[in-house]
Amino acid sequence: MPVFLLRYVKFRAFSPQVFHVKQAFLRNRILALPSEVPLAQSTRSIPIIDYEGSSYKTDFWEGQGREFEDLTERHAVRRLLPSSGNVLVEVGAGFGRLADLYDRFERIVLVDYSTSLLAEARDRFGDDPRYQFVAANVYHLPFVANLADVVVMIRVAHHLEAIDVALAEIHRVLGGGRTFIMEFANKRNAKAIARYLLRKQSWNPFDAEPYEFVPLNFDFHPGWMREQLEQAGFRIEAELAISHFRIPAIKHRVSPALLARIDNAIAGPGAVFKFSPSILTKNISTKPHTPAVGFFQCPKCGNQGLEAKETGYFCPRCEETWRVQDGIADFRFPRPGS
Ligand SMILES: C[S@@+](CC[C@H](N)C(=O)[O-])C[C@H]1O[C@@H](n2cnc3c(N)ncnc32)[C@H](O)[C@@H]1O
Image 1 (cartoon, rainbow, N blue to C red):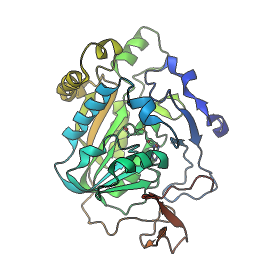
Image 2 (image 1 turned 90 degrees about the horizontal axis):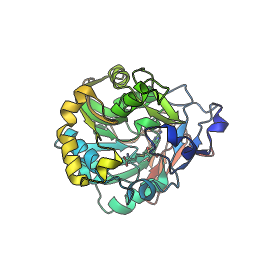
Image 3 (image 1 turned 45 degrees about the vertical axis):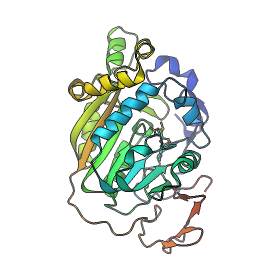
Image 4 (image 1 turned 90 degrees about the vertical axis):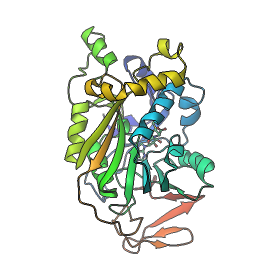
């Protein structure tokens, strides 16, 4: 589809035929990166979804009957998180829904492409000096190699057209032997299989390729995702299959807390079969451990010698200034409108 057609897609028009309708509320703007701008870590021009100004928190979570999904994800992330660590980076942290889970870490870096969602996270966690708020693109993270002890990425993979580039970037930023926790939407779930077998759905859930049910919304085959993770240099240490009860008839009858507890009790064995719509993987970087030097690096040229100024960070090599405004360091690349 030509890039200009990807703009202002009204997802509601597509939702009846899909299993995941997570973004049905959004009048999404799909931001295409201009191809003439040289990209630091990739020669590809990768479109990304833009949540700037969206009311994701209130339109998708608060009062929207998703307490079960929220609780079961929290249980699962808590189970997979290492017991302590120095730097935790959450990529695509949004408004910081899960950020209270990280209190055993000394430095918590919430990264998202949307500054408006980060501002909501800052309003909630900004008084705690351990939290930092960074606007950046997962394809060009502004951190030095080996910085993080843990990277978490929940409900973001389904927006990534170039998961290989994102995984390579996360692998670069994560220390050797350290943990990457990722959630992804599972295309080979029970509902999709049933619909396919009953001929109510044309696409094949057993086919390995990602299924893009609306622009920039992908469901992935677990086997395909495993290959991507391994190719990027990760070993999968644990898997949890969650959200088995994402079914209104059940959710209306059983309390979210009880349902989430049952869901998590079967999440381990369920990962053998992987019939749930959501999978979490705990992945260990297989590279050798090397201590990180510094913290930020220029996402445009990779220079680690950024100079801290009053208004932000200056890169003496490419002469780019990355602004810090209202507590949010803005390292998006290329910046919108540039
Ligand atoms: C469905 S929301 C999930 C937010 C949060 N992880 C949660 O579970 O509540 C997806 C988030 O990914 C962010 N995102 C999507 N593509 C991104 C990219 N290329 N770089 C950084 N963030 C991205 C969006 O801005 C949005 O906040």
